[in-house]
Length: 244
Image 1 (spheres, one colour):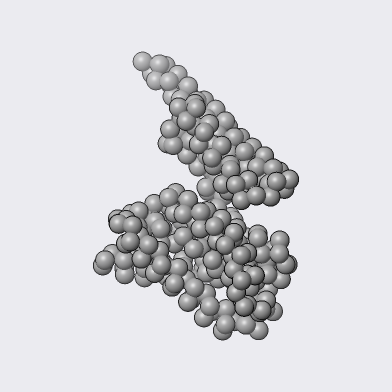
Image 2 (tube, rainbow, N blue to C red):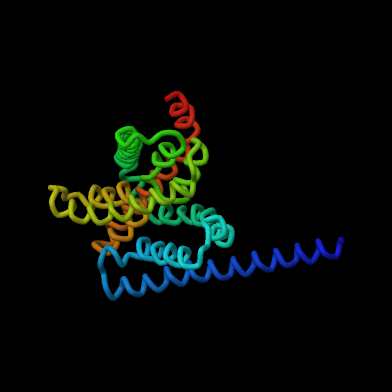
């Protein structure tokens, strides 16, 4: 009986390992593929953050694979968000001169931007009739994924669902931000970069770098500031939103 249980446990471990290798390879492979395609065909629907998940969903449906099976094999990728969060200290250090010169403007801008983002998310959720964990998962959508998932956990949301909202906000924010950049009478380099960093975090910062290196540097800085602010405010947000 003991040998049978040991054999079953061993088989289960091997199966889990195979699932991890398969779905991790597909996730990374699809992302790398669409990144290459996007460099050749620069259209919104070839963006890796859109196209790669679609390819994964099609593959999961075709192979009758559940989300639970997929996430159990790729959870280690989510754990890498921890080191990624620490790496955000790099742009802060590189832009320390800019921070010293504009710390008050940056602080006020990030505070106002974060407040507007959270309130607009709450209003949108109310308008659409969303409540409970779904509503709470939507609130941190305007900060980068590592910070947003942390805040979502603290306030009672679903971190994985928050990550989806963050990606969608980033993609559409980057696309609309470029259009707004040429429509609005904004001339300040600081304001132009902040528009992308606050409105579309990582995707916006990437787009900002494509337009101008200075815009990208400021966008990355604002993105990190907004993430830190939201994480620090997480416990307070949890207390506030539990009352509604």
